[in-house]
Length: 259
Image 1: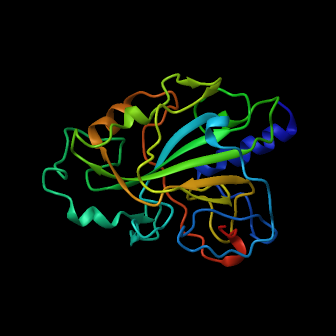
Image 2 (image 1 turned 120 degrees about the horizontal axis):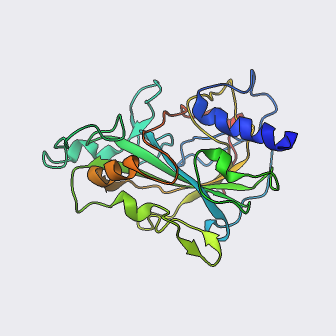
């Protein structure tokens, strides 16, 4: 594999491996996650927005426990630990039935009442969806454009809530592109901005070098925990648990402006 490919693959894998890739954020491009209601940003690094997700290949699906981003609808601070971040405001209104514990563990560390943030990662490379963000590049495409479609969910024990398997890939092809079967489209217009990869390995002192276009939906939705359990038991991405979060980036010098 070419050196450039290995460099990017290593940087991508660090997002999930819990390792830092930089000692200082000086000179880095805009970072993620952010408060999507704050439109201000002073980062001077500019790159082109990635194409719309329907003109890219889905390459990975994964989720984080609690929201990495913040918005009016998910603004309850859950702490600064690995599984901190933000919870949906409506969590306190869930019913006893929605909070009823299912049988057995779900995705190792998820329970009713939790908030999760799901990332559908898309690549400009001609790749097939698979395990980890390394699936978003190849020997022939070492510097892809990346786009992440994002939705925050409240996890509930309710078969009438959204079924996570309806949001999966399952070999779905549309106009020659690998695509999710569905991504929620009733939770508000996505807020689009330039940023980076996320995950607990990064902070405002240790930044991600990767350039990512983000589309974050501003409202929470409900997802059925039983469907999430089924997905974690078997999926193309070998995902079986919720990932940790990167704490909110607030330094304007590390944020892009939202237009």
